[in-house]
Amino acid sequence: MSGGNHNHPRPVIIWAILMLLTIASVIIAEFASSHLLLVIVVFGVAIVKGQLVAVHFMEVGEAAPVWKTLYRVWIVGIGLLLIGAHVISG
Image (cartoon, rainbow, N blue to C red; front, top):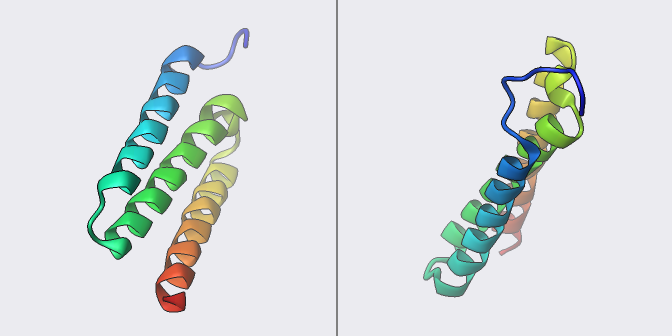
């Protein structure tokens, strides 16, 4: 990506963070004693990863403020909806 905002970390750093979050999710899934905690952590990590991908690889970070806000509300809302549905289902 040429030009653009030079305040963003390099893509390799974001990729490394995404990989670390993925590994952390797997480790937590293997050792979690509470099903509810597991669901919250895994979906929470997915929300964070979705934000990172959108901002750094889909250029949402360069969008108008209203679009950035709408995307963040959408991804967090979907994540919370999935957590809630999972908790309700049992």
